[in-house]
Length: 208
Ligand code: ADP
Ligand code: TYD
Image (cartoon, rainbow, N blue to C red; front, side, top):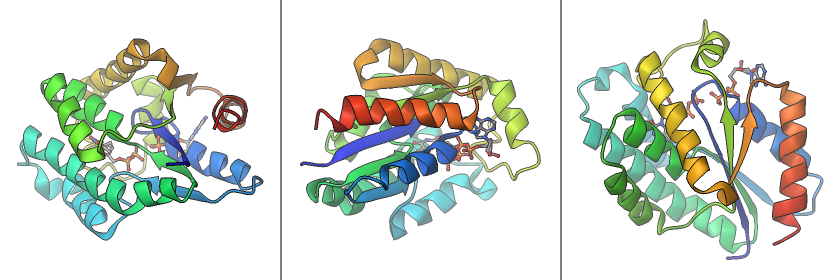
């Protein structure tokens, strides 16, 4: 596959969607097609699963069913959207990917990490991003940013949960530093965007 695959990760409110949009804008100047996808989502099935997962009516959902549903939505997105776009040589920018399930269901829900990782390998056919961008932000600053906006079922899981997720991401990045660009999410949107764009242009696109 000749495309380039970039994922964005971080706790809720860390600025992922903002930076996905800014990177997309910046890369539009290149003569190369771009596919942007958010997870869970990007296909009819994945959006339906998203609805189930984020709905407060699903509060009885077991941790394992939750992990499998996020992974099922991903398997369909990989099949229908990500692989075809990479095969066409496009730049794929993903707002969350497999590391979200490792961080949220593995570290956050405290399910066995090795089992969650195995499920991700299966769901994604082991297709890994060329770059994972982690926007690291304290849980309190992120919560302040989200004040006043609707909190879905996952966002209502509590402060201790979000703290485990944040630490999980930092551990994943520590274990595989070559895969990750870790940025302090508490800088201005413009500064973060320019750091990501420089890194992507110099280290990722140049090498491809
Ligand atoms: P996420 O997709 O990670 O949940 P968003 O990009 O939706 O985060 O951002 C959450 C909120 O924080 C939005 O209101 C957004 O405008 C704001 N925001 C994003 N990045 C920054 C930043 N660097 N500094 C201050 N506020 C930000
Ligand atoms: P998202 O739409 O990215 O929310 P936000 O823009 O607020 O960050 O993701 C929806 C929620 O689902 C979010 O709380 C993170 C959670 N999530 C998981 O728990 N596991 C996963 O595998 C994914 C992709 C998301």
